Length: 215
Image (cartoon, rainbow, N blue to C red; front, side, top):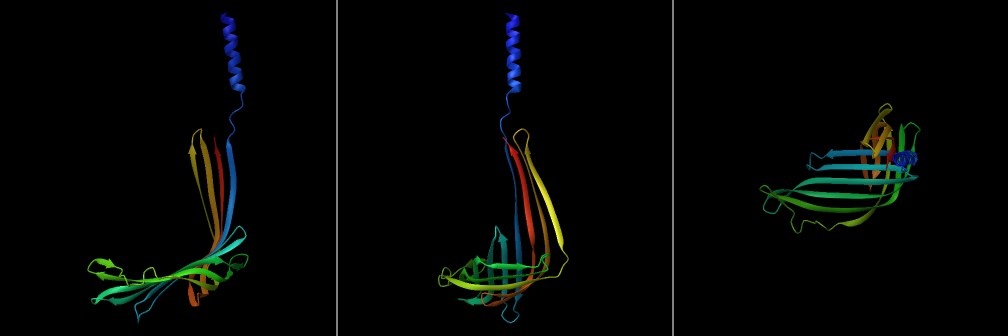
C-alpha cells in the first residue's frame, strides 16, 4: 500500500513537471516619424504687443499633417481706466506635404485649405482680479481656412540622441522600450495664414522600439 502510494506521488510529480507552461503574451514593435518644428516670437516696442507662434509638420504612416498655433497679447485700457490685454489667437490643422534633403539639411512644408479657429477676448485687471467683460468678445470666434508654406534651413551639424527604459514585475511582466532621434537645429521661415513666419526650429526623425513579455 505504501509502495503504491509512493508510485502514485512520483507519477503525479512527473506529470506536473512535464505539463507545458502557460503561453506568454509576447509583443514587439517599432514606429517612426519625421517632424519639422518651428517657433517664433516677437515684441512690438510701439504697441507693446507680444506675438508667439508655433508650427508642427509631422510625417507618420505615409501621411503628413500640419498644426499651427498663434497667440498675440496687446495691452489696452479697459472701462474705468484700468489696464487690460487683448488676446487674439488662431489654431488649426490639416493635411500637407513635406519635402526634405536626405540628412535634414533643408525641408519644405506646404498645405492649402487647412481648417482653423480664430477668436479673441479682453482681459481687464481690477486690483488683483482679472475679469473678462461680457462684451469682451469671448466666444465670438469663427472658423477660418488658411495656407502654409515654410522652409527649414539647418544651422547645426547632425545631432543624435537615444534613450531606453524598462519595467518588470517578477514572474508577471517584463518590458523594454527605447528611442533614437537624429535631427538638426535651424531656421524656419515662410508664410502661414497670410502672415510672415520667421523663427527657429528643428527637423529630423525619431524611432521608437518596444518589447513586452507577460503572462
